[in-house]
Image (cartoon, rainbow, N blue to C red):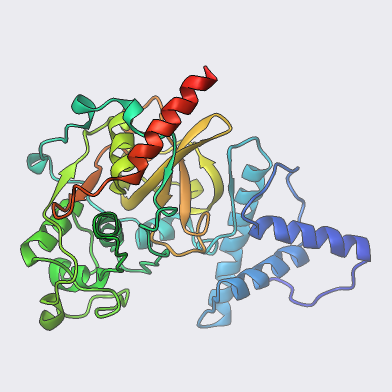
Amino acid sequence: MHMLLLPSTSPMSSHLLFLSIMSLFATTSFSLPIPIRSEYEVSLLYEGWLVKHNKSYDDFIEKEKRYEIFKGNLRYIDKHNAGNHTYSLALNVFADLTVEEYRATYLRTLPPRKWKEMENDSYTFNDTISAAPASIDWRDWGAINPIRNQGGCFSCWAFAVLTTVEALNQIVTGDLVSLSEQQLVDCFNKGCQASYMDDAYQYIIDNGGIDTEQDYPYKSKYGYCDTFKQNTKIVSIDGYRMVHRNNEDALMLAVADQPVAAAVEGYGQNFQLYGNGIFNDYCGTAVDHAVTIVGYDTEGGQDYWIVRNSWGEAWGEFGYMKLQRNTQSRSGKCGIASWPYYPLKYSNMNKPNPLKGKAKEDMARRSSEI
């Protein structure tokens, strides 16, 4: 049982405690010796975490159970952050979950069926890597909506797919519209279970479009298909493609044109408790989660993807992850290059992509630096 009574402390110890607490909730951090934390300090961290994440439990027994899990995650975070890493762990929204609970609640997506693997795009054959700018962040170009939260529904695939559709629609038409994940859950998936990203794209095509989030809002659970709203077709696409598989150069060229949906393996505790920085730790390629790649960049000589998640702003870098890019694995870090998809929208496709001009500027700059 943890102690909630607050003993008196000296000004110096209070200052050190404040710094210790802030280091766990900050978006940036630096290596420190592994803290030796008193029960009082851990209890204070826990109560602060509950307030920060608006968490409450049904009874005292459940709260104590979550406190013990929180303590174990805190020890794990402290040990990691004391080491020499390119990323830090944090007391994020999943800090009261065991890794098994996290996996069972938030990880469940499906890669395309082998027999359904479609023809790869031609990025690697018709372009060179110099055709892409050195860095891209589609958030800076007004193509990405605010982070959303899938909750306990296994709908990451819906968020990943619709982020790419929203972005492409903005690139082509200039309008950024928030689209309805709930329609995909209710009318396509007919439940909160795992699904295939390619089938979700096909549903939008077959339906002739999809409704807005405002008109058909997300509920984080399966309801019933509102057929009237299903027929409200605000944004449409004309097709979808798979990026040339297991090729990060091809993936870079695709992301230079538009955000791309991808599957990753989020199985590990480090993925669960990710806080900030470039994630370059071990993870496998048994993909179990869908995300959207909204850009790429380089920091301190390390290349990374800008990955948009659907777990709310209280995970990672306000909902995003920097994931190591250009690894020795053909499938990319956490398998991100294994199953990448993007939608097609032919109307107004002759509209110039502003990043193509930026690519030429970057090429000229790199040439002058040699």
